Amino acid sequence: MTPRVEETDVLITGCGPVGALTANFLGLYGVRTLLVERMLSPHGLPRAITCDDEALRIYQAAGLSEPMDALMYTVPEVQMTGANGELFARVVIQGLDFGYGFPALRFFSQPYVEDVLRQGLSRFPHVELRFGQSVEAYTQDAHGISATVRDARDGSERTVRARYLLACDGGRSTLRRLAGIEMVGATYDEKMLTIALLLPEPPPPICRMVCDPHRHVFVARCSGNELRVDCTIRRDENPDELLKPERIRQFIAPFVDPDRATVLRAAAYVFNRRMASRWRDGRLFLLGDAAHLMPPVLGQGLCSGLRDAHNLSWKLAAVLRGHADEPLLNTYEQERRPHVEAMLDTSVQMGRVVLTGSRPMAVLRDSVFRALGHIPRAQRFIRDFEFKPRPLISRGFMLGGSRAHRLAPEGTYFPQPRVGAPGGEVVRLDELLGPGFAVLVHPDTRETARRGAQQLAESLGAQCLRIIPPRSGQAQPGEVVDTEGKLDAWFREHRVEIAVLRPDRYLYGAVRGSHLAALSTALRGWIHGPLSGVGPAPLESVSA
Image 1 (tube, rainbow, N blue to C red):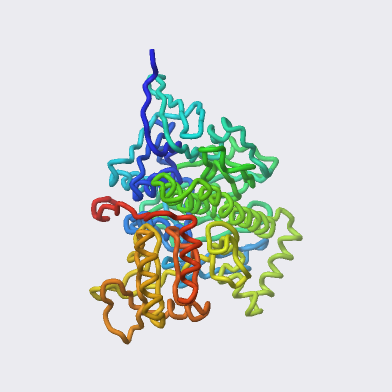
Image 2: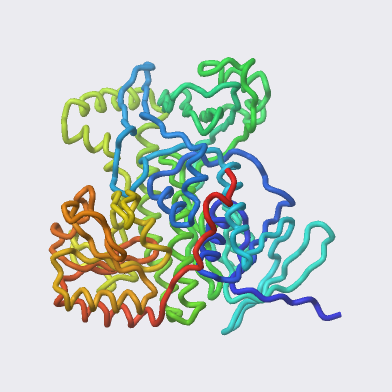
């Protein structure tokens, strides 16, 4: 009997946040997408709990920032207490602004986030999600990939023919194993116990790292009435013993009344610092935990996967539409790997400092941090999260292929201030840019260069917006009011007049009007046609 064959453009395995977000982006670009999940239903377990301003901006790009915002919690500050239980460092989050349009750190419940992402898929008739199905094997050729998909309900198999296959199936990725791709790195001896709690009322506004060398504890309020408590497991302890109800009560008692708390989840896990030796096998791509695993110290595991999704999805759409050539897909790993490596290294180094198991080292650490608190420059380094790797692309899809020098604008993450829209409403900049490329023009640009920028934008299917100062009054169609003055400051700092933003809001290139022709020629060497989205349904249609 001839097996059934169905066709799609992209097949995604794994409906965690990374897989679901990737499917939402592909939906925005009109790409036929099939998303399969091994489990028969959503797992409903609270796992990841933190996201940064970059992640929130990515949700915004998917048209889902408002429902995501509904039950997220912005922590006022992160406290660190040391070997003697005294506060040795404080990172104030409230009001911290990196210029990307959202709070620097928010807490959430993963089941809620996944629910919003799944609801988002319903906006697109060309995107389908199937539970209880998994990819068991695949073959590929020059034109596509043939995957054997097994149904967990009855054991039946079918063949799905796709142009590309995306592995979003987690740290134990089946597809990574089938591709013969190794994970390189280390699994640390450090084991953690994670406890998710539900309280009858909102928890206190707490986010604390208890850096006690005897047992490290992290406790934080999440969204709604949830509280998270993570603590280390010592080498002489049996994780199974710690998961017993009476031990769970002991761990949570310093922070909440155990009799008033419902345990949603309690599990043990180990630290990982591992990365796939390569992120691509022909038409197969690895994203999220399938490509990299990092310690939870900075809370960047999920955020890194979301960056993967945003980087790759628009490139796939461009290639599938014939508006870009296959080499564009090589820039996915080229751009993302260095940033992930930097985030991994920072997480490991920070873990060694704040999670040391040596009491003398912990006492020394506490003293050093208190001393640094009296030095303004050191204060800023800690307070402003300067130790966190910046969103930056050094090589890849940008003017010149790499950054010319340390201060070059190409490859940087473009700021997102609030701006005045036609009609007088003040919104975040990205709300006016759409899901594709965007071209921004400084008001001092000559008319001939403005027309050239408009022509370039039209060839890309992009928005072209002229920036106008607040004194000019209300914006007209094709204009945006620089209400905060941040756009004018950016253009003047880099001494440019025209900026071309990629769909993921990294800067492709910025030039003076006299150099626009060279930029256009370079860009059209990569992009041969318009990349525009189908436009998401109104947010009101996605229930919170």
